[in-house]
Length: 325
Ligand code: AMP
Ligand code: MG
Image (cartoon, rainbow, N blue to C red; front, side):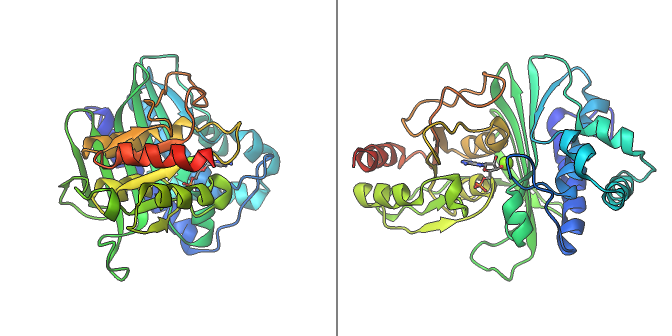
């Protein structure tokens, strides 16, 4: 990495390196080492986080970090072969020899308390990753608790969503006040992205593949109540924010999976900047602004609703009607 890089440039560069590592693992037979809450984690999650946090620690040691993974589970569950594979993956990605302890130190880097906080999901959508479907390397950078910059590397997203045979791999990036852009993950040529101007009747809705991550029946009721007829398509991970930002859908709705569920900041911070800078609007299900300032779970919000802006009020009203049933 280059010492003069801005936080956004560093996030883009390290997400690209991390994405290569993830692709290498997904091309084999990625295995889950389930965490104690039974959520899946793979060597690619650990490797990707090590790559990104090595870069953050080197270039922005005074920035804070919130990240999905930690090494307690890795240290107590990985066998020798997994440790060696992880070290080899990271060494190859950084072009040098890393030691396991060093890799663990990068994964666990949390930085000091700071006005800047990096929210990192090294593989958002690990279940999609394990199925060979969509996933994202997601980086959101908060400044004073507000999303400031976002990067989503989407290794399996077709460049043309209407053509599933088109080459795969897209990276989205956005900086507050500067707009959102995308680029082939493996190439150059950034282009601006902008949400669509469809109205509610034609709006296309995005949701999670995993029913347990939300409430798909509520989404269908919301569509009926709001007269939304553009269809409901399900993708894993924050690629949903990228798809909304590039104008291929108008609504991403994430109802709570259970009353006490609260969202993780790393599942949204990056995507929120990309969607908002593309002209979209992101709130919770009640239309309330997302609050990233709690330093952990997003305790002040209920679910997430991201739209092209035009359909936002109709979606909130549809959700209220659907929830009243
Ligand atoms: P998605 O692929 O959009 O379903 O989102 C993946 C993210 O869902 C993961 O990174 C998890 O942090 C998050 N997740 C895990 N369990 C739940 C749950 N019960 N409800 C909502 N989100 C969850
Ligand atoms: Mg996630």
